[in-house]
Structures are given as structure tokens and as C-alpha cells.
Length: 260
Length: 359
Image 1: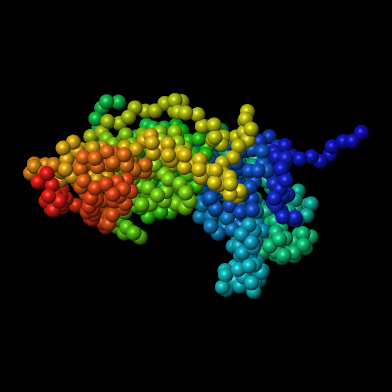
Image 2 (image 1 turned 90 degrees about the vertical axis):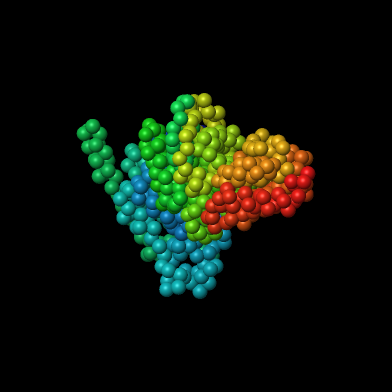
């Protein structure tokens, strides 16, 4: 008699990921599918995949998805959510997508307090285009467009978008996690759950930044990539809850309801 | 509603949009079309389920429209020339996604920042797709307050029917002028055709997605031919032009929008002097009403294209006529509004140069 202890989550299609060995997207996809299943929102969730490695996410997730032009995820999600306020809307974006070409859309969606969830996968590199410098590439880190390493005086310092978004009044919950260890993976899942729950409660803009390995473009082994996150990436982008006003907002919302 | 109202052009567009089921508007301030954005703020607010967003950019506005359209709403944005350039990325995606949307372009002088005066320099951009890739958008050119109402309603209907972005191409003159208008009846949203492709959560149906990425070249080719078949159907079905005084004409002016109104004034003047001149006014710029031109070319040889540009639509006239007749051009770019007097002088000169009074 055998018991099944590990299975494909309900909302992951029976398809083989195209992601490189050791890539963090596969783990994050699985976590997302598990959270959608556990929160029982598969019939009302709408995802917005980006331009980049995760653009094909609609081949993997078994819920509705609408592609956004590069960087425009937050604007597309805004349009969807305003028409369908009872649906659960998320974007899935890389660092170049969200923190370079889509900076404006993201900041203003946060500032308006759009009730959407952003999943920001930060691997410090433009993956799909072959490893160019991203806004989040670490100081000194090699990329195909910073062959001698990122020079902060020439290329600018890595940008901390999550911190920037935290100062907007409309953002409610922003946490930075990673998927480089079982412990961090569990924390990531908890953060995703918390973000989606806040959206279900109508509290405002939520974002989970996930530090994720890109062994192919980092030119490291899968294991060394996991270690690189601990040894280097988290020094610039420390894992922490950057903003959490869920309690405050919930109390305010309850008060408002009681007053009416 | 049979009541005649005296309304500003931009308000006619806004009110007709609301009456036509538009429930989402996103826009960004730019002159000379701010009256429309401001009107939409009030019009959407008045509705139980209307959304108005002042977007952080033209790009954000068109992408919000993409989202709203994906979610199944009749959605609209508006801008003027420089802003429309910024929206072209999103318009290309709308075309690829096969999503309905309405875009209002209140053209101004250009290129670059140009000026805020009425101009027709965006004809190429509007009628050739405008963004990247192999596609077209339906382009409608109103020339009166009443037509602003009719074509705004038609824009939403065409967008839905063909799942395609539709652009209304006007200018500041169209937007500012006050004319008596009969607005259309409010549309019952329940009578709209179903949108089985929309994203509203996979409840009671399999999950679905909307995409524009087709890495397999054969699939992208199929997608392009599918769009092309749609373009052919649209060309066959909706091409439209107004013919004015063409029956006995020895020469016709071809002009659209504001230029056509000026041309009409000129034609009335020269008719009083006995010159037999008519007007073909394309109402659809894409699809271009080529058949109407070919039909007229059986009876006369001389065509004078008048545009508020250095000559853009004139290329479509040449393509339509394929050598049938003499195609002349007169244009004033940069936001210059010719007077009917000025155009009538051009007509008289040309009329005699071509010896039309002798026939």
C-alpha cells in the first residue's frame, strides 16, 4: 500500500517547464499554484505574466492569464482589477520588467493603492535576453553589458524598488524573501499567502520580492547560485518584511464598516 | 432621444461613449483634448460601474485599457498626436491580442511637440497600424458634431464586432466646435455580443489566456493571416465615404475631417461661379474607400486632394486610382487652417488649367 505524499498542485498544468536547470521560476510557480489552491481562489484569479523568461507562464498555470507588454504589468492589472474588483489579480514580473522599463507603472499602481498583488522575481539579470545588466545587478557583478563588473559610478547602483514602493501611501505589505533554501522557500510561500489574503480583504497594493537564482547567466552551478544569494545578493537586498500595515488597514476597514 | 442639444465636440464623444456602454476610461493630460478627459472623469463617475483613471503616462493609460478590455469592458482612451505616438506600443498589442478598444486622436501640428493647432499629420501613423508589426486599426474621420456621435457609437460596435482597436481621428477644431447634436439612445449592455474570450476567472469553464507571443514562426504566420483575413472582411464591409455634388462634377476634391468642411465651403463658392466641382469625403480612412473613388473615376479625370499636411492621404488616392485620372494635391501643414476662399482659388486655377470649362 503506497500513499501519495507529493503531487502536482491542482493549478499547475501537466506541462514541462522550459526553465533552465536550477532556475528559481519553477519553485516560485509551484508555490504560487499551491497558494492559489490553498486559498481556494483558482476560479477567480487572473495572472499577468511579463515579457521575459516567465512570459510562457500561461502554459503552466491552470487559471486565467493575460500577457502584458514589457514592464506594463501593473497598468494591465489595474485595468483588469478595476473592472473585476471581486477577482484576484496578480502580476508576475522580473527585475528588468518591473524596476527598469516598468518603474513608472509600478510606482503609480502602488501609489494609487491598486488592490493587486505583484510577484517580483529578482535574479539580478536580464535572463531571457542573455544576461545583460539589470537594475538590480550587484555592484561589481559581471554581466554581458558590464564585462568588467557593474561600476556604480558609471552604471548606477543596484536599485531597491521594494524600498521605494514602501514609501507610497497605497502599499500595504511588501516583503523580500528568497527561494534558495527550504526555510526561505517556506517563508516565500507564507509571504505569498499573506499578500493574496490582504488583496482578498481589499486592503491595497501588496508585493513579494523573491530573490531567485539564475545559474545560466550567473555562470555558476545550481548549488553555487543558491550560495551566491546568501553570500552576496542578500547583502544588498536583505531578506525582511519591508512594510506591513495589514493590521492597521484591517482595523481601519473594520472601523469604517462599523461607522456606516 | 430625439432632443437636439448644442454640444462641444469633445463632450459629444464623451457622452456618446458613456451612452455606448463605455465603462472604462484612462487618459493623460495633453492639449488640445483635455476637455474629453475631463468630461470622462464626470461621465464615468456618474455611472454605478464606471471607472475613470488619470494615468501616470500615455503608456500606462493604453495598458490600463488593455487590462479593462481583457476583463470584458468597453474601454476607451484619448490623446493628441505626441501622446498617441506613446500609445502605439499598446495599440500593437491590442491588435495582436485581438482586443476591442477605442482610441481618440485629436491631432495637432507636428512632428515633435509641434503646436496645438488642428492638423492632419498623423494620417500615415493612424492608417498603417502605427505601432510595430503587421496590422491595421480601423480609422474613422468625423466631420461634424452629429458624426462625432454616430462614429463614436460605431467605433465601439466595430471594435467589438471585429475585436480590433478603432481610432477616431479628429483635431482640435472637431473637439472645440459647438453644433446641434442628437445623441444616440443609451445602449443596453445586456444586448452586447458575448465575449467568450474575456478573462474573468476560470469558473465553470477551462482556464484561458490572452497572448501575443508566438515563438513558432508557423503559428505567428497563421496569426498574421488570420488578422489579414479580418482586415479583408473589414475592408469589404465598412468602407464609407460621403459624396457631395459629384453627379455632374468635372473635378472632385478629396478631403476628410476639418479639411473636408473647408473644401465644402469652397465648392459652394465655385459652384456659384458655375464650376462643376464635387467632394469625396472618406469617412473611413482605413479601410480607405477605394471603390467610391474608382466609381467616380469612370466619369471624370481630375482629383484634387486637400489635406492639412504635406500630403499623406494623397498616397492612398494614388493607390486606389492606379493611374486612372490626374491626381493633384494642395496641403497646408503645421496647424494652418485654410479658408474656403483660399481653397476656392486653388480650385479655380486648377479647373482652368485643366480646361474643364471647355468640356
